[in-house]
Amino acid sequence: MRKPSSPSVHFTRSRISSLRKVNLESAPFEFIKKRITLLIVGYTIQSPIIPLGQKLFRGIKYSVKPINLRELSYPPAQIAVTFQRANRSGQPMFYGSTAREAPFFELGARRGKHLVISRWRANDLLLVNNAGYSKS
Image (spheres, rainbow, N blue to C red):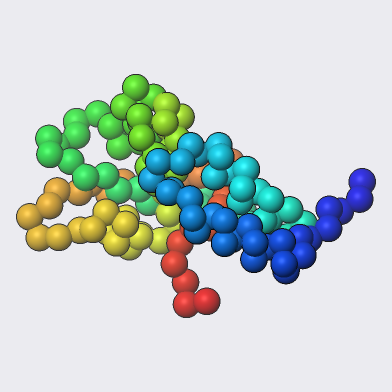
């Protein structure tokens, strides 16, 4: 199988220019996805692999203290009706971090707010999308 060629600089700039004109709040997700896919064809990205047994941390905000373990995992499909950190509408996914501090930053921890930070372990190798912040 032949590796796809990368888009030209002219094409890339043109596509980015057209994306800047799109109202991302109202544009359908699949429309945005197709436009971005055209930009990344031919590029290579590195994806970390989380090993079996790796600790993962997940945080949730709450107004009523959770009493069941399932409340700490991903939300049920009927509740995941909007785009969230990792969810599409009606398609919930587990979202966690290998950094214990990440949930505090991502949830905007402030005095008087209620958070639960849970610790999980990977029960298989996980190919992940690194969507965090780094110096680079």
